[in-house]
View 1 (cartoon, rainbow, N blue to C red):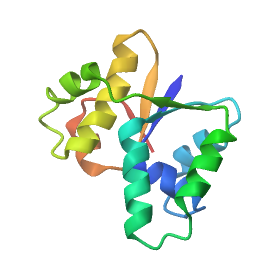
View 2 (view 1 turned 135 degrees about the vertical axis):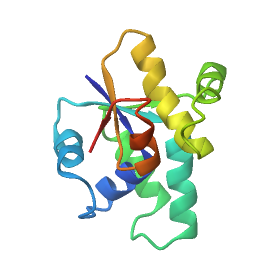
View 3 (view 1 turned 90 degrees about the vertical axis):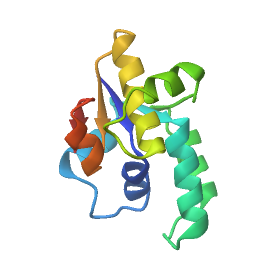
View 4 (view 1 turned 120 degrees about the horizontal axis):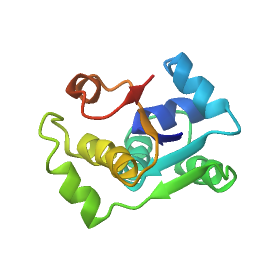
Length: 131
């Protein structure tokens, strides 16, 4: 199973924030988990850290990703953009791209779930979600 990591999931994990859901925490703390970080989510994490006081720095995020071989950054490709354009039930552009990443993995034959608490993504039922 591959787990696609949403923006706030990564922030809350790195900041040891209690808002991280129990299933999300289990997945992110399991040394066997295959973690896929969409490039869009990483860019959002950096933007949020730059604009809010979260107690973590962008260098902390980059170092954590460099030091954790479970994380693979999934590029924002034309295929992801095209897939995201078909996800109109998800209102926010970046959320569409993150969900599209999970769907790209699934369409490529991988078992994948999106680790998110985003209400709009979950309500869309377009992608398997775990929290």
